[in-house]
Length: 78
Image (spheres, rainbow, N blue to C red):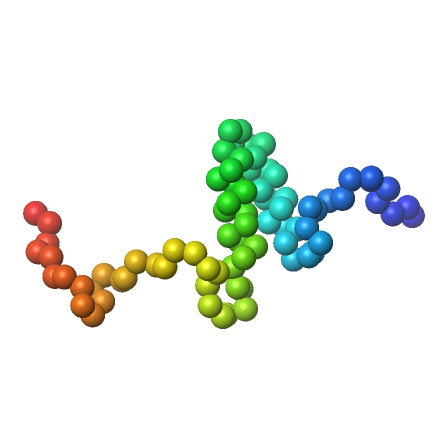
């Protein structure tokens, strides 16, 4: 049997755990032309996320949950 003789690597990343994210990003770029910047940003966020149960990747903090302490009470919408 012969090994993959393709000159082009299957992933841009050296980390094999990121290869699926790279592949998904390339697929999305083909499907949604003109949105490369947004797709690259989302792909990078996925790469930066800590899936080990630690803290979330750096970025904008999540908004406070509804009903959290210190949140204003609002009357129900009619």
